Image (cartoon, rainbow, N blue to C red; front, side, top):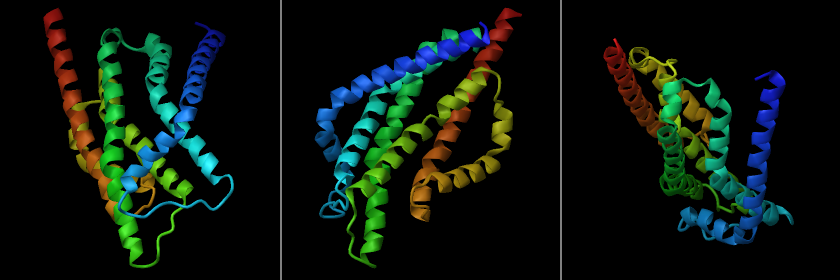
Length: 240
């Protein structure tokens, strides 16, 4: 395909994602109060309730929560469109296992969201509010809390894609398990730095909450890469 054809294909797939996203937003807009209640649930017991300090804050927060939910619902479509665009450039062995990789990416993403929502968010919020109550009376705005919650949930979903990305790179021959094992100490340092950068509050407690799953996911990625390399070696022996 020419460059113009590639750009036309990319534009078509982006437009497909946008149309589907807009349709989901329209469907979920009336359910915004239900979505707000779901996101407020992890904060129950830590504070009595939220406030808003600007006339538009409640509406903009409502809309942002609808957008988050719509993105989560649309993620399978976005992932498929991305795969369909890059598939021609991938090795044939990888294309044959597309169903496995597609399901792996989806399960990883939704597992990350569930982990962030069920464990990371309530733990982080309870710790921070409990620490702050010894200093001042907490009066947290709805927008501030939702921004905090949305950030943690999205980061959780993306971080859990680490084994998937490592597996894809290993399948493409771009990762070597020997190098990964010998570089564990450097990987640990990079994970700690990354946890410090992506943690919304930059406090040590929440950095550890983010870093530990990332370390475990990195180790899972090494196991996946090892399995892929052994499969490739066995396939090569059979073909010789």
